[in-house]
Image 1 (cartoon, one colour):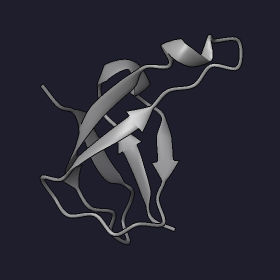
Image 2: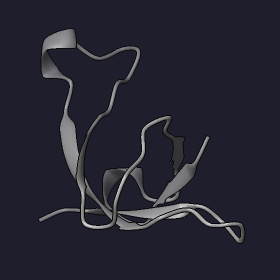
Image 3: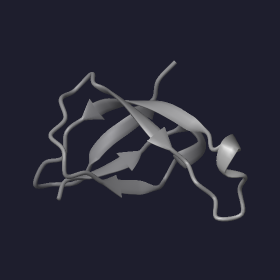
Image 4: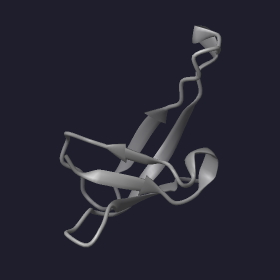
Length: 65
């Protein structure tokens, strides 16, 4: 599965894999869940697909807005 690295924002330095195909410029809504968090207060962040993964490394996701 392709891997993406969050380059900034609240998830900076973290990585995620995706089974979906993405394109540069696409906006992904990412839900951030903490096990101790109230289920009604789970934040979402919009991340822009800045670069796709390639054989040399993961793709990049940048906080949108």
